[in-house]
Image (tube, rainbow, N blue to C red; front, side):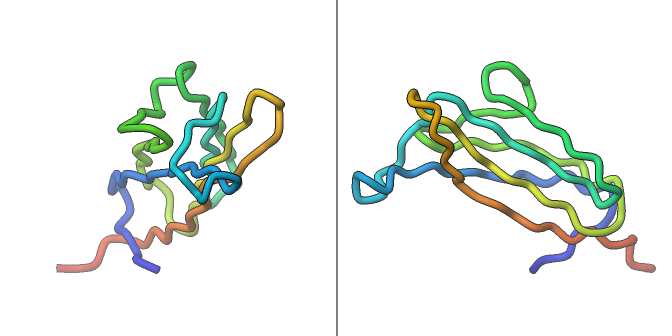
Length: 102
């Protein structure tokens, strides 16, 4: 696991694939991203509703997270297809540490 300094902004990417089609990259009907801070604040974003999520291509989404709190951050990408079934794309744990002394 890579540790990042506090106040860094990092890009977290979620990639969705279809397990029924040999894991071909695919877009869910709805895409969500949950960001959980070290202090327990959970924020959920929805693609095309919240500007925090961008799309770079079929099935590939990203958000930029400002690590403004020391500790472990958790980012979870998930989606729903047209049937309402949930599909998880990625979960990421990010460690944020104080600035190193020069």
